[in-house]
Image (cartoon, rainbow, N blue to C red; front, side, top):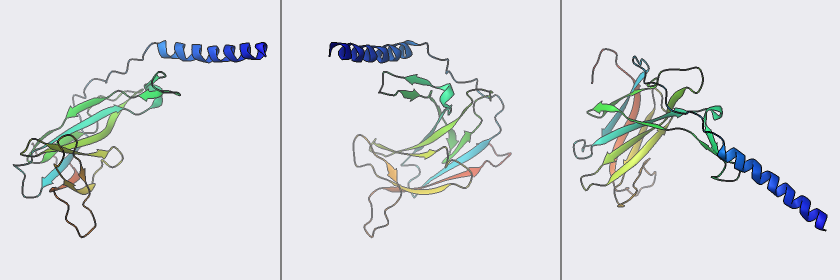
Length: 189
């Protein structure tokens, strides 16, 4: 009985030491690459707020990061089995009149741990100071993407924009149309 208990304690201790050493290992340099000085892959995100463009200003931020597991930190302390910590790079998109420039090649390319768009966040602000968010995933963020949403500003903390309900009951809020198109070459914002 004592021998079995010692083996059990020894096994548990071995596993604990492995996790301890993994948690204490040095972190990789996951800083973003330099900003691309001549980006070419530009898309435009067009956000049209129905009838209230000046009352509901829109801002857009783009989150860039690497997408490969080899280029991420694994934090074993976070949970059993680890948590992959992808580095983040939120960039405010430049725009005017509801048209925002978003570069897919914002960061300079590199062989290993290349950075790309992870998702695009659209925030609409109401006159009462509240805001509502929606996002487009990297898989959907491509030319031709279209989405109609309804944003409500009911809560004081978190509000979201969501596709309009298909029921007969009208949903309170402000409607907006979101689309991604290829940038018109030669036009400046």
